[in-house]
Every structure is written in C-alpha cells, then in structure tokens.
Image 1 (cartoon, rainbow, N blue to C red):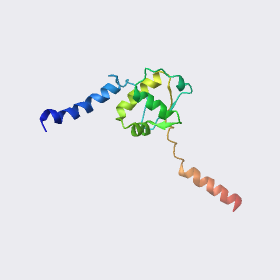
Image 2: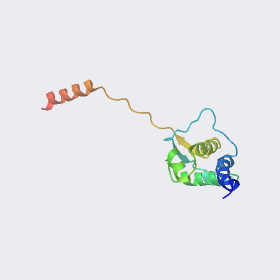
Image 3: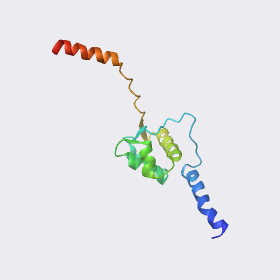
Image 4: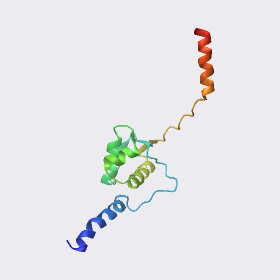
Length: 125
C-alpha cells in the first residue's frame, strides 16, 4: 500500500464532519449538554427540502419523542461536536424543541429527617 493510499481514508474522515456541518461551528453559548432532551417540533412535517440527509435523519429520529443529545450522537454514529452543530442549526430554524436537564435536587438535611422521624414515633408509636 502506498503512502497516498494510506492517507486518503484519514483525509476522508477529516473532511466528512466539515462537509456535514457545512463548515459551521458551535456558537459561543453552547446550549446542548449530553443530557439535554430534544424532540422534533409539531410542524416538522412541513420541513423544507434544503436540509441535509443528516439533518433529515436527525429530525426523523426525534419525531418519536424526546432523546438526549448523547443518544442522538450514538444512533447517528457521528461525533458529538457535529451533532451539536446540527442540533443548533435545527433549533435556530424552529424544527426542534429542547428541554434543558433538570437541576439536581438539593440533599435534605439529615437533622430535619431525624426530627420528622422522632415526631412520627412520638405520635404513632
């Protein structure tokens, strides 16, 4: 195998994400974490034909309900950065609905739980 034959697959892998994203980059305020939930907007059936095959696949996948960004990247077998760029473009176009992850609940103070338990025992038992 010659040197040029060995370099071609690597070059193809480097060009492909650039082609898929049309050279776009993530905006500074990246709104998509790995666990952000995404679904297609209700009027996704009226999407224009100018969407790329990857964008159309992504919308079709999200039309069944909410999926996380990580799940979408896994199903599409695309790098996370590429998926985030596609999601951002589709969200800006109004084709997607996103739901931010729920904030982690604050832990309850153990002393309060003990006082509640003591009160229940005093009352009922």
